[in-house]
Image (cartoon, rainbow, N blue to C red; front, side, top):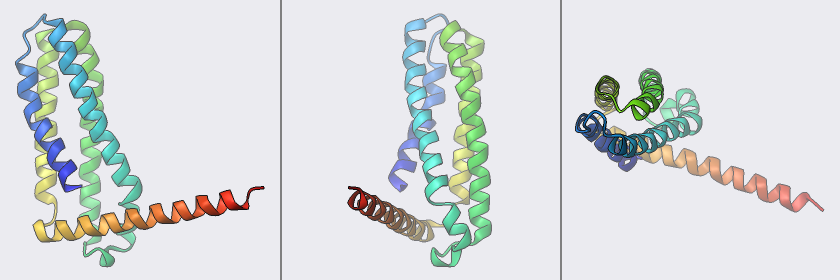
Length: 163
């Protein structure tokens, strides 16, 4: 997940400049940038939902097993909610910019991206120091692997029990 986080942060850091570089009225370039940003925001959204569904519920109840304070996990969850709100704002602003290719719409998208980049940077600063983040990473994958293994076993048992 560290790699996914790095990729998303990098691409989003570049996004405000990419948006501001589009000339008003350039509908072709606006459309291409909107499509790129939509794909990027979809990846961010899916990644966050997967983290919420697969990782957060368990560590809060068993934080001692993954070496994290439950308060830290709750703070990260709250930050994730703020990130989701910014992504929702962008989901509303991108189609307006694509439809108008206007400077005001472009600037609104760029400003919201600036806030998202700042939010992600603050989230990174709130994460545990590198060693603890790596422990979190390993524990997260163990939790995911265990859950996926149980799901696979359950599916196999169900398929074997069918006539």
